[in-house]
Length: 191
Image (cartoon, rainbow, N blue to C red):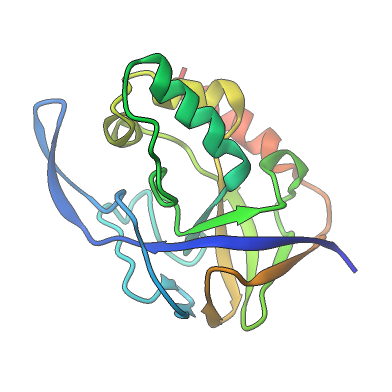
């Protein structure tokens, strides 16, 4: 039996126009909590949209997960710069807010077994200017890079459904590529 955890939040978002850095941008980074069970299809959660398919979505990035253990760090960062510390799950753009699993412990190919679906770890998130915007902190992406608190993308191995409150089990894959090593390589672009 593998390491276990729990789904604390399930969130989806729709593409919307935003003014970011004086330019009109379409993004679906804002995610909102969904009550009850949500269908998980090969391209992600039912009702979730991605605006820029060159860097988001697709089979390898169907679902974005983020460890709840990092939320206190982000709340503190907001407090330091004088912003409200309220950050509901989904505020970092994630579809699933999970407890019990951290990026530093994951490898590409590890699988998360939920009661009704299976998701496979594919790669870390690479933060961009949109993350800075939703966090109202022009250094948020750099802070994500410095801490390694990036979250991770998941491919859908077995479609089904997921809901907040459900347990999951982490089952190890081939242990060949640590997620943290991929993030360090990708982070060189953000510095």
